Length: 302
Image (tube, rainbow, N blue to C red):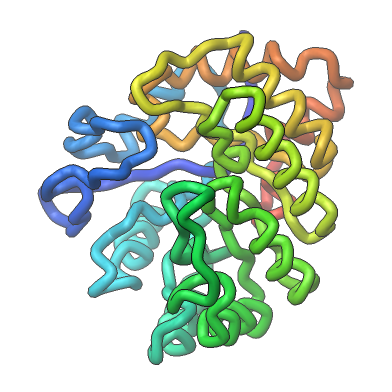
């Protein structure tokens, strides 16, 4: 099965030339898939092409990969120069802190790059549901964070939302406050707890944020810490997520190379294609191509 698709979320990095502390220093102790030593090597466009060769990837969206925060625009400049040389990636989700004094300056600089369509800025979150605190600096309840977030409208940028499911009710409040700002939830809301109770909490959180019509969903990254990638378990997650959001607000995204810790690209794409085979051909094409193009304002010929 050869699938035509837009990959709405992937990463590239050159560890010999550019600064990625999480990949060049000691492992992050709370990384959601555990040990990630296998990622600590260059991953450049030829590597991505090799991984994706079984499918027809017609466009890609590069999501910020935690380049050193001392130079938030450096990654965007590097990717834009790459695009000028080889035509890839098609779009960039860049980084900017919302709660810092120079937030507006960084957003303006990022927005000046034509490829930049959105911002991923990870708010302060709790490691588990029972550790949540209110109004921490840099959190979604921080007035300064909200002030910076509001500037996305001025620069016509979307927000890539990456938080665990226990913060989705909080994120829904932000989405409701700013209905004019497009938001896309990363990684299927991170259904990390696959117990009955955990899935019920994830489901409730997803239903809460899906009520906000400006929030879309990246159906991506089902990897779990120290556990294999299981088709039937993840199929249930995918179909439930599509039911909650509606397939018209959902898009495929690989999260490669991070997802490669659990699955290869061909198996990922063909698995998801089989999972959604009960939808109409138009719905499947929208999921794999048109929805990402619409959200990220990509010009494509499909």
